[in-house]
Image (cartoon, rainbow, N blue to C red):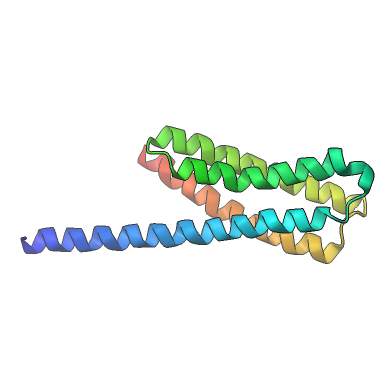
Amino acid sequence: MTRITYHISHITKHITHNMERFHDKLKKKMDKFAHLAYKITKDFPKNELYGATSQLRRAALSVILNYIEGYARKRHLIKINFFETSYGSLQESKYLLEFALKENWLKHDDYASIDGLANEIGAMLWKTIEHITRDT
């Protein structure tokens, strides 16, 4: 192995390792978001079980499920499609959380906590989408 080949191999391994760490960190945040959404909705009014409660739970799960499915895909355009769907579900979740706050179904502290997490996820996910789009 030549010296240049060794350095390229080393750099590639380093980049791959950093990407995996970023992916794992994002996935953990998404998992926390989904579980927090389920926890928060337990206190929603019972008459909203098939309305806002169900919708928020499905949207929050869709964030991580679409991300995981997209991450498993090889083709960049397919990946982008799933990641954009994940991002859309995150925005839907954010609106439902804001709606729940205005309806007084949600404590302000709980809202601030989950909204902050959603903003972190959104920034990381958007960065991922932009990175893939740039490489396509």
